[in-house]
Length: 131
Image (cartoon, rainbow, N blue to C red; front, side):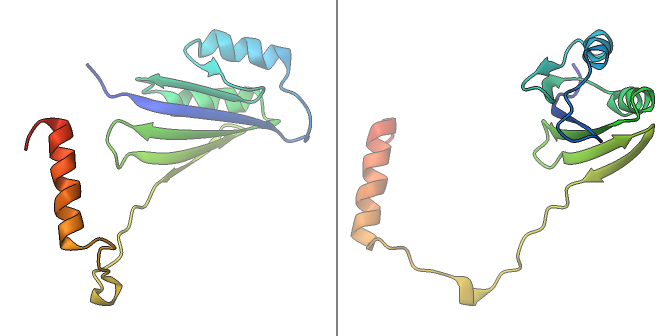
């Protein structure tokens, strides 16, 4: 079965406004054929790509003039992260999800009256056939 992640890879040249080389694009397609090219410098896939870290370290070492940014969004709603690669080095940055503490001063009334809320709820249940 496995664990799927949506990946978005962006590749930037250290020399701005320089397109990715044809040799690099051919190598990327050969080594990572599951990546779909979305734009001139962005690629994506929905895969079980367990060795992305190793693959991109090796690729970034081979192409040190490129900076690689990989965004991952896993099937688990809390699995969000960025990873950065350059010249064989990597930095992994998982998302930090926080919630505000409860504050009664931030509580708000509904803009609807109780009768309006009942009507809205009734209409929604009618649509679903559960009234």
